Amino acid sequence: MKPVEALTVDEIDLSDLAFWERPWEEREGAFATLRRQRPLAHFEEADLTQVTPLAPPPGPGYWAVTRFADVTEVSRNPDLYCSGKGAVSVLDIPPEMMEYFAGMISTDNPHHARLRRIVSAAFNPRRVREIEDTIQRVAVDVISRVETEGTGDFVLDVAAPMPLKIICDMMGVPESEYATVFRCSNLILGGADLEYIPEGKDPFLELLGAGQTLTGLMQSIAADRLEHPTDDLTSALVNTNIDGEALTDAELASFFILLLTAGNETTRNSITHGLYAITTHPEQRSIWQGDVDGVTATAVEEIVRWASPVIWMRRTVTTDTVLSGVELHPDDKVLLYYSSANRDEAVFEDPFTFDVLRQPNPHVGFGAAGPHFCLGAHLARREIDVMFRELFRAFPGIRSTSEPDRLRSDFINGIKHLDFEVTGA
Image 1 (cartoon, rainbow, N blue to C red):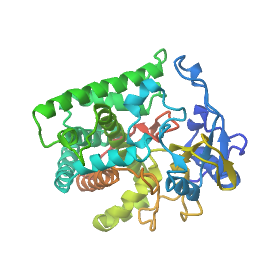
Image 2 (cartoon, rainbow, N blue to C red):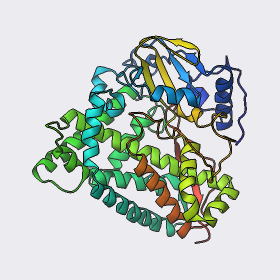
Image 3 (tube, one colour):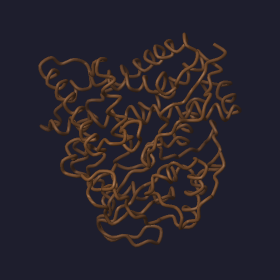
Image 4 (cartoon, one colour):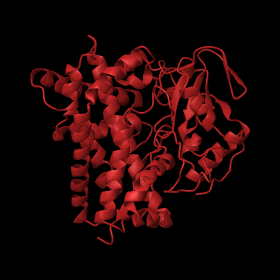
């Protein structure tokens, strides 16, 4: 893939969904232009009141942080750039949605440190080993179902079922609720896409409804685990007490939503981008399949860099500071464009080349170093690793047979559908 700089720097508008519907090459070209000419670019916020009357009016705008060095600088300084006013929303999170969507990623210390301490205690070594064993079993099971068909939708048949089942099993969600979790996570992270919220539906109400549905599911499971503990993560979370502190019901619910959405959506998109990448770069597939044990670790990192499944996260300036020569002031919003940082020519050699042997590869696909580095990075890496090992074992010639049907989103670099076929089984 080569970037196409079809827009001048003044024509680029990251707040316009039409920009995100442009071909990938033009989007990458626009970010190359920004990195070179205007690495901290200011944009007006989208007027969501035209979409839903329940949305607040646009705020004062935001700064797009597009260079790797600036993204990492902001991430390492949470005192200067806080998360508490909303990490996943350009708008400050409305009070009625705070209960559902202000999880760990939208908190600051000491609250964030307390949450992370309690949650981390639930991920003890035994539970991590059990999860890793589950990943292997689930991958084999998913692939065995594909074998009889030979073709299908890679997202729905392969990439989505694996992380969905793993995260649901971790949390003790019964199989009867898988479809509900899948629907709600799609809606929460892809709410601007008409496949998930048809015209005539209010996105704000649909998003709120999805949060309420998942919260209700969590409350039901948590109540049962208090009475009848099991070995799942929900049991561990409701019964974990660190120095006299435990998760409140609201904290447990928001963490549950975070896991079910982030732990499902981003991994499935990485796996899907991975198949499309090895199909369109057959020489890289040959290198990987020629030495699966030796190449998989670097290939997984390259897939995450290449996919950059989460396009950005927001921070809010807390005190006067300067970034890349731009003066920033309290309450200024900054969006960390991980997708742009992962193509920064100053850091990555040939950044628009998919290279399964890429080393070093200091990508920020899981966020940059700092207190909000992805808690599930190890799990995601393991899932991608196992899935491609099993795909290569069962279907050495598997390939995509269509262009990706991309998610209409400025936040998630998602692929909704991707046709595939298996050969060489």
